[in-house]
Length: 624
Image 1 (cartoon, rainbow, N blue to C red):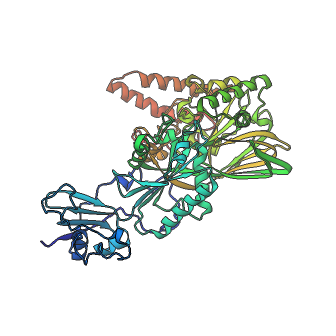
Image 2 (image 1 turned 30 degrees about the vertical axis):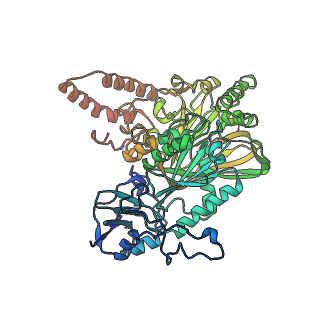
Image 3 (image 1 turned 120 degrees about the horizontal axis):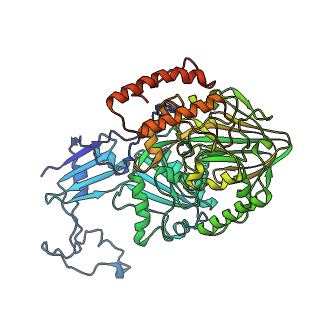
């Protein structure tokens, strides 16, 4: 029987090398919006049929006879008689006690070469051999999808410890045999270096490579440590379409894991499980995930002459440069965190208790306003002076300033921009990034940072509860670059992605968006980051995505401790009416009348508020 080898050309296969250095468009990202990983994708239906008798003969090779003197098994040095076959037994053709390989009638090869034999020789993804009895076997030559897991054995409850203690460096996934999983100890310098070098080798040398997944198993800071290491190796983490990141929540807060849809923690202590079932479930869940984007920010703190920066438990330095993916803060949380890090425990529960103890300690010492150290903010070519009593329109100046990239924080999947009642900036000069009418919904890929203030110790402790997040002090939505300027001889604490710092004599702290990376998240129904990108939320008008006119398109609440003007009070009355109308069913006639009042109210709102331009374009109702 003449056999046929079918070559499958994969239309989704990535090129062997990165294609250029193109910056993704934040409004309309060029990266796939919610597409799934190709690791579990079905084979393409279109196949190019070719005939390769050599490959057929290779898979249907005849077994070696045991009693043949010319057989390779019989060609043993006569001086070693113990190794010379002594049997003349020949298995009967009907003896199926130990069946040999089935006969191959049809061969399907998945790869990039136009020749099936070259595909196998150079590293095919899969060779599927089928017999006349409809039996199909998958013969993997070289993996096309790799998963590198860098585990931090000290994070959280130390759930990553079993992964680095197993006597396994890598294994194949039986359900998806073209996937190979690599395990490395993030804290072991030699092991981490070995993993980074291997993935760099694969990216540059393995032609059949389609996707390289790099996952951090630890806290929120572990991912950035892996990204930093890859950048130092010269790996293009931003523009190589084959590089995909994800996280496994072994830390304490795990904010990034939550907005990706992977939950706050992995249950149990033995996450690998019996026969690796637990680890395989983690792997397969993410291989079935969806792609999304995440901005990565560079953070730099400069100091005056004689100034210093000290990370908790480490030596003082004069300049700090690092990367940020989640969020940072200035003020109270950094102060609490420095004490926490120097007393960190060995379990997630004990760590939470220690953090609470450190937080309660501030009740004794009090918390000074952030503006004692911060003198101004700079973004979008504008400088906002925070010195003087008239710079802010609140009676209580913030004791904490939060700078957020992802819509989730504090280990509780808290989206301040979406959960807190919408309010105007606490900065009296409202223009550009501090003007509420220029704000858009909070997205992690739009090149902007959402900045908030916490006005008092009561607010700081109440933020752990949903009712305590309603009236936080909004500052603005800051595009890159964004700078915080400090007063002379300022002493302040900072937190960046779960790492805590104490500073003295800091001069300026600058946030610059330096890249976007591609992540694997859960289903859009459970993943905020995937859902935002899929639905193009960053393109929606206004801070709630409903429009740009406060009091008309969306309700506006009173800022915590705010001094209200007449226009502010008028705006809030309109907001109350808006909330009432939204909650009250109306007839079609009533809807038309309300729409007419809505259009008539727009110019009045624009004239009644100094922050709303008179020629402001109002999006059509369908767009809102």
